[in-house]
Amino acid sequence: MRNVLLIVIPLFAFFSESIKAESLSNNNKSSEQTSNITIISDIQTNDNKKGVFNAIGNVKITYPNKNILATSDKAKYLKLENKIILTGNVHMIKKNSHSILAEEIVFIIGDDRIIANSKSKSQVLTKLLFTDLKNDKGLY
Image (spheres, rainbow, N blue to C red):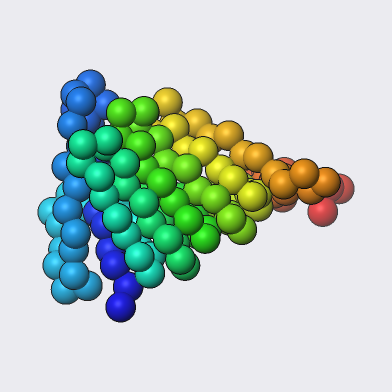
């Protein structure tokens, strides 16, 4: 059975210390769908004292507000640092923008930035989409 975690991040969450997290079944829907990060995986654990959430196995993350879809072997959400660390065969796609393949991607939610790392003797692959160049004559 696959688990689903929904991290609700309203606009004011970046200025407060709390982010509401709740498990959802496939039939539940939230009224705040556009500002949620959803994590689906085979196994999920949460440590409220340390503020650490782990997702293991076939991890899929969707962040509709930023048009981001990511898959990985594992994911860790660090509440105090407000970041998600994806590890193992990470593939992140930002719709109509770019995609990244890496061994590890750190997504810093509040700053809206990522850091991609590779294994030794390997490289990070980024594919950029330049929509404004596709219509220029002579380029394609």
